[in-house]
Length: 209
Image (cartoon, rainbow, N blue to C red; front, side):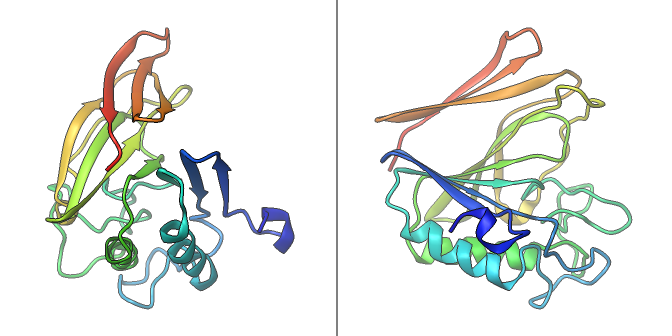
């Protein structure tokens, strides 16, 4: 279903052949109030969009499934209330109570694992530094999160990641303008981070499987 089929709907998927399907989220229009305590009734996506995501990603036959989120899964943002997925504090540790959307995030990731989703990559924004993270929230399942930018906003810096996702930062760099580039070939996905002049800062290659 296209975005225009429901008036104000923005979330959608785009397919490029057999190698890639992108799932572009709307993390603003349907979300619960940021100040509410996190829990099973709090939602970043709203019921319809979450249902669409949980059906569409596992059903995709593309090699790579890229989910685009305007807020990061693992970098805590927002004060005093969290306005991203994570509830973590400045040390990356999750408190007993929080105001993020981690309950919904973790439920979505758990369902992806149970449905056997492989080759999942999340492209995220809202923080002003470059980073590539391998998350392994379950011992038998992992995915990557890619963050790039800014090109025309104040510089940010890497910070502790949400420990609940068991993250491993493969590259993190702040204090400069940057952008990311993803290339997909039959046997690999390659992500490159570049500075404003186009010089390569870091390259990482992933194989499907």
